[in-house]
Length: 531
Ligand SMILES: NC(=O)c1ccc[n+]([C@@H]2O[C@H](COP(=O)([O-])OP(=O)(O)OC[C@H]3O[C@@H](n4cnc5c(N)ncnc54)[C@H](O)[C@@H]3O)[C@@H](O)[C@H]2O)c1
Ligand SMILES: O=C(O)[C@H](O)COP(=O)(O)O
Image (cartoon, rainbow, N blue to C red; front, top):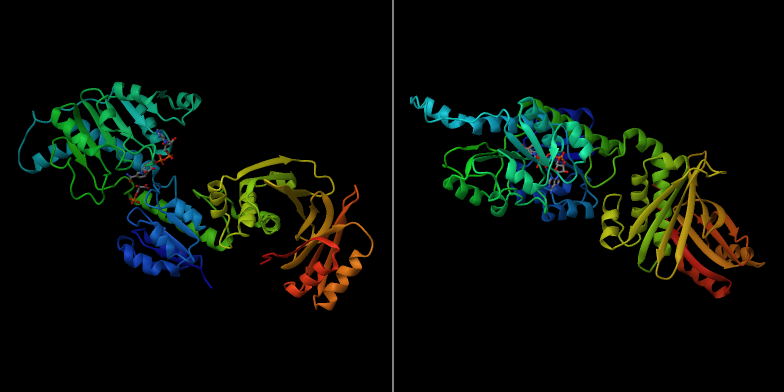
């Protein structure tokens, strides 16, 4: 059946056409996102949800999203999506980080000009038939200091355009390197320095716990008298009430805001004050940007739902369609290795280490690691997947580390997964044979060659004669049909293991009968999702 996608915000119909062309069943309901109760009622029917900023994807909505695999934001900011809840539920969250960046940077520059020359008020006054030439005295941008808070994609373009306007650009961004700042021709500064020196301040950070209220009353008081502030990023970054007070006192000369603490903003302490330029979250509102984000969102979602390719996900490593094809068997193997360990381990896991050797070490390792962790976590939560498992593992304080080397010798590549608990360390290795099928090749350091089946039985015993016969006979008398039987023993002597690939789940009576022989140290029936 074709995957089903809901578009619950005003997206260009280009997206709808792309979904249809790609064979996706699409419901275009651009006003549904505003009705959270209705959205919660219908979300259970969909594999994908395409949104802009009007749809709020809350934990409550996600509770009903039983089939949902992907939420894609046609735009940049994802603060309207509960990403932790989505990740825990295994839902990928994507955005389109480049589609509207130029348009938004241009809007910030437009707002900077507007507030420097009071263009909206001058225009309204002229429309009203007044000719107030002396009322609207402006300020020049050339040689003024522009303080950019957040020099990422949009902030970077703003820096570039402002340098073209002959402004002196200083930037505060803890993640901006000196080398990058030099390349951009901007001076990297601390926030207090920016506040003290800037004639204009423009914000280009996401809204997070760290950036919320970054322009607090206290920080606004550190700004230069006559400062002008532009916010094209997110409401909540600036204390609007403090700005209103400081506009009235004359400390702030003007502000230009595209975004507000509460949206839609129908009321604000800033409304009606002189030299306050407001636009209704229009940063991304150009034909070009809306075409870009609609096209990207539809392609990204279709790719994921149809091929497993992951692009621009915020909660999962990217996987291209080509990688998804080449890595498919290795992703399956990673899941099986994890599943083996998960089923064998009933005490809390402290650490997971994954060794990638040979050809596989050149692949997209974060994706493979997520698949192994998902395999482990499925033992406790069958809903765990590559998105949710790393989040849950982190929450449980499990340390995940990976190493890679290129000396696999007999195999083209192999993966060894080791898990550490308080009691023991457990490891399993696997590879992909030339037939494209995953195999277990090492358990506890003992070499084996086990085909992986949906139903298996793992036993260990002291290495002594008569065990294989007893195992085969017990299975036979309990109607267990063995498809494949693999043995291995420690070269140092002592322990031996057997992995049986059987036609159906091993019945309890067979396990009880094996126990009664007293020959086996460990007896563990296993299930694998061989899909
Ligand atoms: N008004 C609009 O319509 C509109 C359109 C697009 C984007 N946006 C907003 O603009 C924001 C920025 O978009 P972008 O594409 O440039 O994002 P980006 O991720 O490319 O850049 C954000 C920058 O902020 C920096 N940063 C993060 N935390 C910081 C902190 N505590 N202090 C200082 N810098 C910090 C990051 O290092 C990064 O360089 C988005 O998150 C979105 O909220 C608004
Ligand atoms: O983060 C973004 O991309 C912008 O805020 C645009 O939001 P919009 O798609 O709702 O216009």
